[in-house]
Image 1 (tube, chains in turn brown, purple):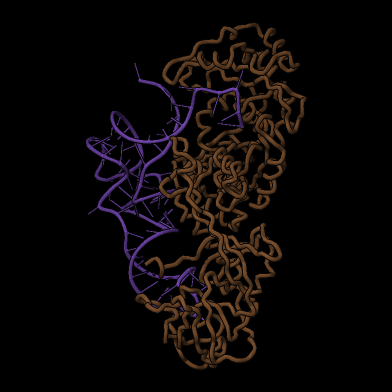
Image 2: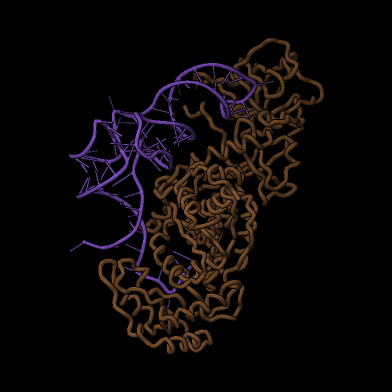
Length: 559
RNA sequence: AGGGGUGUAGCCAAGCGGUAAGGCACUAGACUUUGACCCUAGCAUGCGUAGGUUCAAAUCCUGCCACCCCUGCCA
């Protein structure tokens, strides 16, 4: 058990928790991560899961992973499996994995019968349309169902008949008896059980009635012993109903408490599940794990480290204020993490051939530091020789001001190798540059340079015999930058075609040092002076495909 | 008089009656065998707004304004 005096609240939820712990309203912090297994997680869900896990951890508590699977028509066991993998990737281990269906359906049914006997619920024969009509509006009260005051014994029998399959879908419902005039529409005798003749991925055909979220969720929390149910702000209006169930229906001593916080939104990022699903189904992307998606699987495939996601979410704090965070705030954490961890390599994305005219021997070995910023320094080898490739943009015939790279007659340092000087430009018949003729300064090799020559710039290169061709996939934002909130734009009538950025996937070829042939799927690298890249799962032995996770910051080209 | 929320810099966000933390972005500069990273400096006489209480208000009180969410037998 932790000492409360040693804990400082870092957000309003932790303040509330400390109050409850001090007052004795709760004695420990047990939270839950309750996904409905009906789609893939995205970064918005990550905030919820991370919040539940981190909060419990801070107070010495723990977290359950609970599949909130009360709607068989939307759910699928494959998703449940994917959540366990995603959670593990994020670095969290739930105390236990629970399927609400399997673990709680029986208990919830019992509780519903008890409610009926206590006069707190009734079987209603109104149709869905009739329920909507009698519910009232935002500004007017609803009217009582004509079945509201039927005897408990009659409701009980009918409820048992519902369970026994004697009713068709939609024919009857079980409703909580609360208040049809409540200003909170959720309290106007909400449906708590519906008839649904559907096969559940977990419980099969055992049930043909299923509990509704507002009834099931508080009971699941209570049954599990969850003390703090941390969810997003869209459930704020449901809290009175949550509390009603806990205080009027639940008989246990433990009283879980729901606290809501604002969702995470990213500028220009499309997250809505149904829209992503449509893009997947229409083959507009490579799948749920498309690197342009901010789904967990998409981010992972793109090469974004789990730690960067956690750092980003924790850095943003927890409040109830609506926020739309610029991608640059996330990118900062991606770069920070990758800078710490990614192995450096030299890759020429847009090659320009250079012949070192005074170098005639076989290629020689050079050493490349894997990560100068790492605690332990390791290296790998590459080569330097007569024929090399540099980036097109690292040579200029008409250099702009402060251009520190190679020019005709100028010098530049080749990273980890020699200083070279450009003496001549050889053109093709069509007038384009064919290759550069340079000389190297033999006494300037990295690590043993005694020349004292200073150059303004250093560029990367790949020596011909040490190079192999790879495929590069670069990504633009999936949607046009005109739309700050793409989901809202779609909801307000913008078509998907208008919303999508054209050619947001750009494929090209590059020359990489052979060291990268050791790469495994998912390995991340910094291609020096360019950016961070990750070996994609589509790679084959003959075609290495690297996804560009993110570029390095570039303060030169920006100016 | 439906109800529930939220307003602190371009974007997040601390602050809880004692005179506006921090981060991102941005701008300058330093350093550099990655124009990255690291480092230094700058960046709100102002806290949605109008009053009030107080020696003192982003913090307390009152009114107003703006924006978001809620009428599934979805979660």
